[in-house]
Length: 260
Image 1: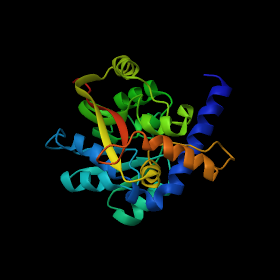
Image 2: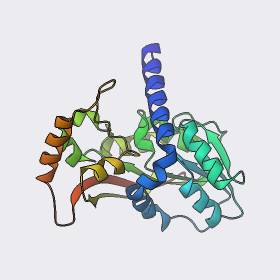
Image 3: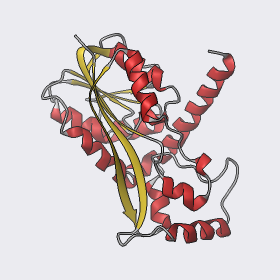
């Protein structure tokens, strides 16, 4: 890997960490969609686990639930954003181990976890192959990873309204994710691609709801004018349904296993 590529990835990670750290104090108020999507993983988790990693733990909502579910386990929450980890530590205390780090370069030894949980985090990693290789490395033989991530098409209504598709999170397609899993040595025990649609009363509520997912409408060092907002609002209104303004999440739910 070239120095230019490394510098580019480091810059991307720094921007993501900064954005999530800024959002951390209000994140839980904005994360309704993320919470509902996370519930898709809950029913398929194993009955027991001893060393559990919440990869991309944010403010620790799922980490705490994992600690309650696996009360005898050592539970670790990992996140790239220091601000998220600080919120998690303040809310949930030190009985959970809070670890700064990158999913593509996990700061743990081999066979450290028998269960990895990750809700809407790996779409932030530019190298999905590295993430899967790291999961394989840190899982024990027979270990499991339960993951939700996002696919292309997510937030398509917002891309239409603002006419800035390049500003939205660029995610790997399903074939790329499957290929990365296969090359890592992990196996897919179960997967499902779904479209989860949420509805909001107005544009302000829509924009608040996506802060934790990664839509960046304004260009760097630029601000949106009142006219920009009015035009986007009028365009979005064309999509209104009886339930409200729609926002779509194209989700991929994965149950991965490392063979014995």
